[in-house]
Image 1 (tube, helix red, strand yellow):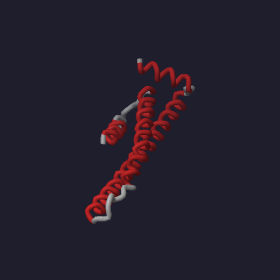
Image 2: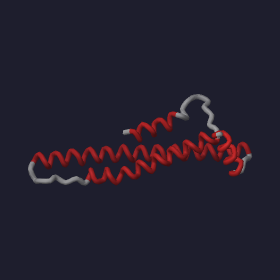
Image 3: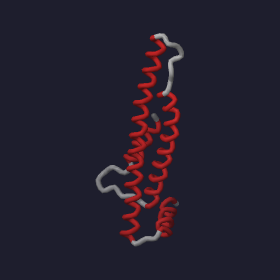
Image 4: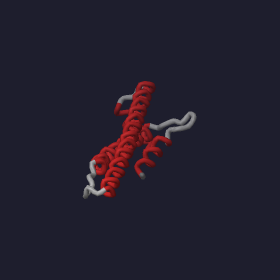
Length: 121
């Protein structure tokens, strides 16, 4: 659940009327969101194990428990994928903002890197 909270926090940092990003903030948000996507993608392997659980025995209690666990895993996978989709869209938005910033300010990639590193100092 922590990564879900981190994803929401990453997005919330940019919400608000007239909020402006510095080059360093854009780069940090792209990096943070990209790292969260990787975390969620790694989680999918573990979630798949939950989805594929089999009952240890054919008795009704074991079957019911395995079915409930598998159904929960499917819900978790859907939520996990939703977070990945959201973060990937957010990364695209940030990259578009970066491109617009570069174009509007007539900056090169080297100028951008300099600005990003200066605002971190």
